[in-house]
Length: 379
Image (cartoon, rainbow, N blue to C red; front, side, top):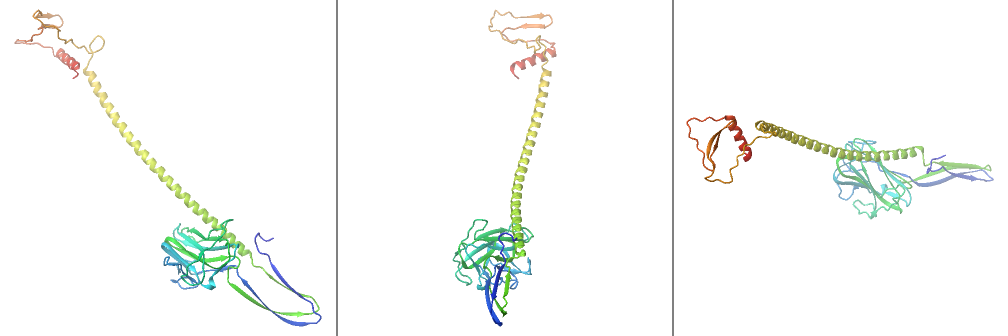
């Protein structure tokens, strides 16, 4: 059986019965409108606008035919530059006729040496075929059930021709629709080629005249004409186009994910670098603290060595240097010899003066008493 949505064969049969044999010449003319409109860019010279195309308003200066790249043939339309660069078909023999509630598919190929260049296709209504005419409105469409809006955007993939499609279903019948096509901020050249629109009655009208010689006898004669407007090639072409659309969409999503991952990796790398710098700073601070603690420890050990405890409880023996609370003439002044301690002098509150030609002092005891005095005074 045929695939869903394909057109079936149509048959026309003519049957005649006459009692006498005569020869008839039958002249018939059938007018049909093709279901394919090709807006290819092979007609014209390099450096000119494509045949039957004009500049849309004053948007840009490119969209000219070029031999730099071509998907088929030798020419394609080249777009490059900041902001909008747009062209549109305008000639009466290249106008686009659309019927209400019929599905139409615009397809074309785009190419650029850089990925992410923006391309747009758009359907607009016009009242005449003059160049520079103002459009009367955007094409009203049904955007449900997989159909697109009157305008659609695409992105290039670097160094690769890709097929893109723009599928619409008009809400009204329009006899003069223009295809507005071009680029936005294409800083790397974009090439467009093989523009085709398929759908009911979208192509030019053709008339087929048939002359038939018919011999009519008493014997029944039947002539049958069979036509088939849908072929396996058409269906295969459409399905390949759909697969290409899915691949392009997947590629764009993959590029978006890659950019997101690059951003996350950058943030994590920066955070790790900052953490490493903080660890290095703390390590340097810890080294300084360790050196400081080591220096203080050495100083304490040196002090402990100088303060050699010799008291009965292990503490430094500090002599009692208290001054008597009361001083009077009753104080007993004198000099006495103390066993084991040398000479004991009691001067009470008076000055103690030693007038002696010779004086014997123990250096060890003097140093100990001086250290004890310093410790008591906090020096």
